[in-house]
Amino acid sequence: MQLDDLYRRVIMDHYKNPRNRGKFEEGALTVDLNNPTCGDRISLQLIVEDNVVKDARFTGEGCSISMSSASMMTEAVKGRTFDEAMDLAGRFSRLMIGESVDFDDYEDLEALSGVNKFPARIKCATLAWNALKKGIQADN
Image 1: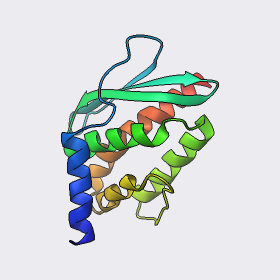
Image 2: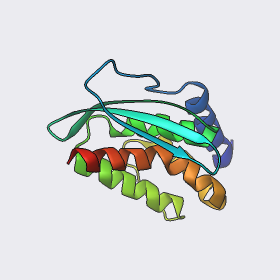
Image 3: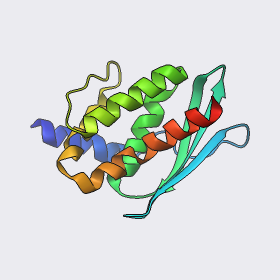
Image 4: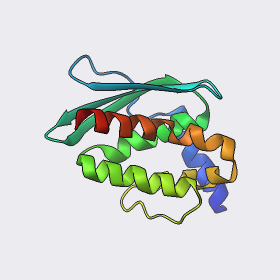
């Protein structure tokens, strides 16, 4: 199996079987963002304690890229401090401009590396990450 095929399978798995999809009943930091260009929208919820992302969930509608990226992001940031989560978001942004990036213990994110070949889709992939950054900045 070629790497591109593997990446497609990872993306489609997160799209068809999203991790952390849903809402918290209460006590969550909530950020709503949309991409007016294509209509993707996300509502990201974070449970934060002492500047640590204890849990994350999302709801929304959009293409396979935006929804799988949200699924991957919520998995990757759980248990991370704000600084660690912002570092991860920065690395993801660099991945989107074609830089080689290491994601340590959460390699699924590398499946989105091919998005940088399609500039119109970069906003799709970064929507959830922008919501994360906005949430962390609002809570600090």
